[in-house]
Image (cartoon, rainbow, N blue to C red; front, top):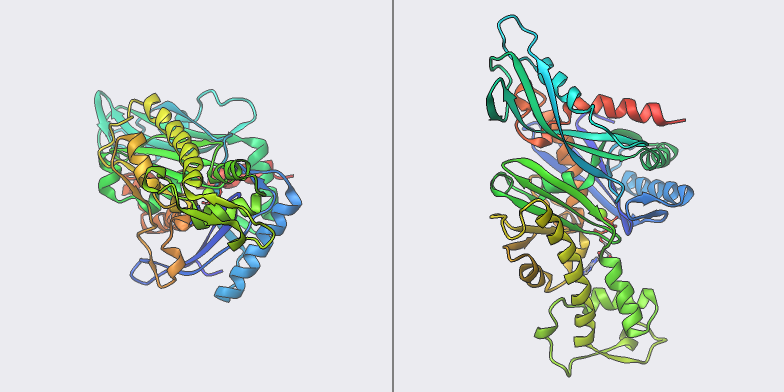
Length: 412
Ligand SMILES: Nc1ncnc2c1ncn2[C@@H]1O[C@H](COP(=O)(O)OP(=O)(O)OP(=O)(O)O)[C@@H](O)[C@H]1O
Ligand SMILES: [Mg+2]
């Protein structure tokens, strides 16, 4: 595969999304293919059935290869799941140079030191993201490269995942014949796709409303303040509709996709849905308001759980750039209003930006994650200079080889 071609792979629990990007001569990223296909064997971000997952990935890759006409043998893969945890850390390094000038190597040693925090047993570090540096007594430095000092300290956020889950995921990918260019915590990649510089600077929360999970991250002054995966998603709305309307899950999903609305107060009592329109085996007529009430109750619960996470870091109601909702679950009509009521913040839907594409379906919240994976890798190509330690998207450079080593180490 040409060096200018990159592939992103989002192993969602509802759908696998694959996107292929080509880096243009002017360094812009063009999406040349995007595919989604059904996902089996993955739930809440973790592999629950190896064979089914391998089959789903293989089917997705085959479909993509047919579309773009290029064999795909490696990808940047999103990793998600409630097992992923993030914690604060600190690392210190003495400056090596006699003249006290901070080199890339000093930064790397400080970041290495930040990794030595107590990692729970059976967990592996996925990312170490520097927030800021302290050079001697000077605090709040974003890029210490070239500065002068004796002591370099880094305040970082360490993201870790369960070794067994990483191992299962990598096993499936290798069995499907795909090499891993990089493993990236999905919600961080999603943020890359849907946010602009100003939002990251002002303070913003990105919420990815998926099928069985809801992931969130908060960014402020370009730093990641928190990142978490909650074990609840749009599938729970489907399950509630199935119970509330006394219909099967498949029909409940159709009801959600065709008739669900998040704000019941906007719906008149007399509005009805004829289930026979969706399934010839059904004769029941249900109230549209009831569908909206069921949908609203679950959405409110999900948003309140996200708001609890904001409260934990002191940012509930305090993010000037508000909340950006993405993931296919965010396509539910009326959900922005519900989110505004819960968060008491500006709320918008997050579409993937920063790429060129003539493929219509890429301009959709459900593709935000996979496009983010492409951008993550693209930034690596574009900013692989020592001055690139400015935005978190570029900070993985130092850890890429370590991740690849980790994968090799844990593979049988
Ligand atoms: N137009 C729509 N309106 C409402 N919900 C929708 C719409 N389209 C898709 N969904 C819901 O979005 C969910 C799938 O979202 P998404 O594809 O982002 O999840 P995923 O990435 O597969 O899952 P996860 O991230 O939890 O592993 C499904 O529950 C689906 O019913
Ligand atoms: Mg997802």
